[in-house]
Image (cartoon, rainbow over all chains, first blue to last red; front, side, top):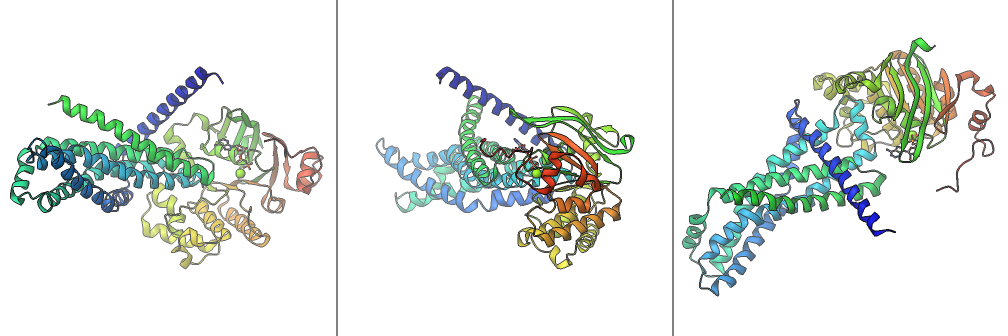
Length: 258
Length: 258
Ligand SMILES: Nc1ncnc2c1ncn2[C@@H]1O[C@H](COP(=O)(O)OP(=O)(O)O)[C@@H](O)[C@H]1O
Ligand SMILES: [Mg+2]
């Protein structure tokens, strides 16, 4: 095969996907703002995304905070700058690692579940059945997940931030010999509102991406059980990559504002 | 019968990729009558029905519902028109996240904004009509046998008392006795509602039982239609081969083609 043709093919497929995702996004967002909104379904999705992800995201944050404290201590002790440990941990957690690692964990847990559920509904004609029962599938399936993603993830990540900082504090005071009061003072003296807010904005964007990719791949799955399996994988992979890309651009946005 | 057609298809054409599935379908369903379309697996029967429901958009052709061109409907007109329809899907397509009674009441609660208690009463009444007691209403669809699922799907299709009902292979995959039960239910429900029905099947016993008129689809076209009684002396070799289920004849199974 002609390699140029292959590259051209891949590029065209990519453009087609971008177009499809854009139309899908537009349709989903349109139904978020057009009443009626299914509050009960939105509430259930909030539970799935927020409450049930809490153990996984909490553990991730805890150990990330702990290892961060260790590593930064090792690094900073070479310059006799051990006091930096507390505030680098808090900055690292709130600005980057909390939202990104938390987002990736939720992508693995939730985007896959959404794609599997909606994909099964697609291949068993349940989505067609919704339409014939005068219910718009975008309103019934997509909008509640988008709302839940955007609203719930910042709350989840805020909790994760607190747990992560606590992890750093535990290692700092128990293992590295910091005085508890000094460690906490160092943590909060340098922390600015923007550090936390930028992380929560990220979380919100990631929540949107996770819901979008879960729904999109579910909606477009075909070909029975195998197709649903593929949709699940695609949802997690694409959500994770888009999270990492979006992370850079949101960071840049906040960065250039300073 | 042309000016009293509830539904009329004129030259409906649909292809998926390079594969032509509907190659100019002409078909009329007379008001208040039952038309059964027979044809082999994969001949595009389900695609045809989904075109009428607007779930699939044909490339060319006209679809008239009560004399109005369905292809030119706006989103809200389509939604309004869909309220006239009830649909029994091939695989039942019950919502597995909802209880049986919620499935039956779905179109009433979500589509017509009926009060839940009132909708539940109607749902239990409809379940009774298909021979299922109120205790079944509290179960989840996955706890039911295939025949019971079909009955629930039938109850859901007739719950909103539609003017038009589509049955996509209502008896496929059921034992002959259960198939006959379903056929009788379809007949009695339709008589009670005075509905116009379009059914699809490759089960001749079922076709003979529920049809006023029969049409046969082959290679994307309607190759024969007539009154149900005429099907045995249609003078059409394709129809003869199909209703007698013979391997030899003008219809060749494309066994070797991928
Ligand atoms: N969404 C789709 N995309 C691609 N091909 C499809 C789609 N739906 C149906 N087909 C193809 O159209 C043909 C007819 O399908 P269908 O109408 O389901 O057959 P049946 O007459 O058994 O109901 C099949 O070959 C099927 O592969
Ligand atoms: Mg079919």
